Image 1 (spheres, rainbow, N blue to C red):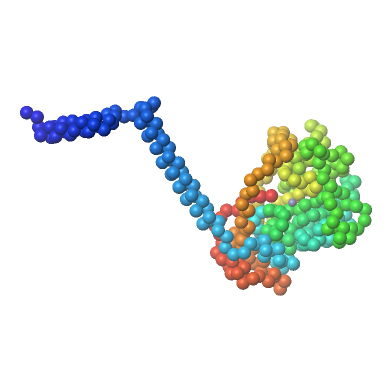
Image 2: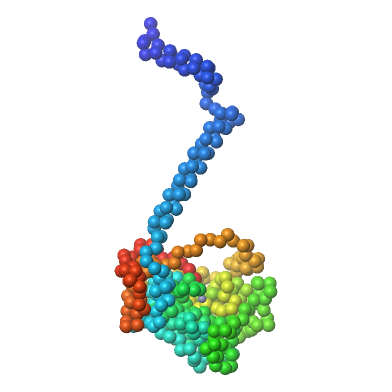
Length: 364
Ligand SMILES: [Zn+2]
């Protein structure tokens, strides 16, 4: 005789079979090609899509939470500083996220240079950078047949983000120097605002224009790269190519590794020095690669600049940096001395806000 449990099981199975037959349902698992299989796969896809959408929305929400700015934009506050912070000279933070204590001015006129765009008040830098610019100007005039430097933006009196232009130049270790030779006269204030720099590019955008590019440019750039403190010099890829071609294969090519191809930079070159001694909160950038950068990297850059950029969809503007996102010491830099810029109430409150834990980002 069958046991009651076995009987119940047999009955249940018969019942399920009968119901399935009545509803015309399959008694086996769906296999590829079945209508049911396709339906199940579509359902699974829809569920996965929904889950992915949810995950993306969650990520967006958490990103918003972590980067929500506190207080006014730091560029407004640093842009209002008219004089340097009377403190020991120190570059604080990263080239694109920091500030500068104890800045020195580049005199607007020197024996071999003239500062341009004086209305911007950006002829300030770490004293080591200012000394280096003055040295480059005088040595290039003496030895390289370069008549003198026209110096563009360095940093604001207390460094920091700027209201217009650069992402970097924040810690007083970056300087833009025109590729236009200095004219043989002292420029007026007005001329320093109006005079346009000369582009070195030929029409093809991948080579220099021989009508304006000279051997003296090569000598000037080589001299700038020869200083130990200089870590990088940014130039347009066409200029990098001209430099690579100007140095013989068996010649001294070591300095070429410091010449870094980058967008723009065909009207001026951008000198960046390493973190100076005594700037303990200065965040260094990894050294450039060991090779001369005249191979694959340059080829890639030339391909990038050869074709005109496709019109891009306008991206939402980046949120400007706030005081809470800059190194803590930048608050003291901003508020020190009798000439400290008058901060609105909200800004003063933000300057005492707790420091954000976000990691510094790179930039040029
Ligand atoms: Zn620059």
